[in-house]
Image (cartoon, rainbow, N blue to C red; front, side, top):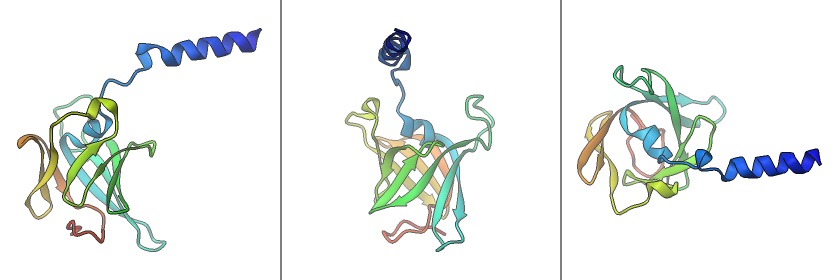
Length: 145
């Protein structure tokens, strides 16, 4: 009986709208002022970029807070949460695609180069954030230094 009730409560809670995702996780990681801190792993020289908040103006994303990670994947970059869940991709053309249902739509999200190590995040050519730093080393042409 106890197991049945526990299962019933768990089923109710996970089906509850309180647990429904209402934000685009890739946007939570990449929108706003962010900084990429490259990490080079000693075994094989594999690189990744830790995504950190680069603003003092947002109490939900304090300066330096880890928002996620960008890793090299097949033909592009994977955007990961701090828990290592892949929530989207950045293509070699720096177009961003979120995998959550709420990320869908006809808007185009692009990370546009401004100058060496500085980018603007754009939705339909309107700025929604800045990126400073470099992407991890890759073989598909995105500058890593």
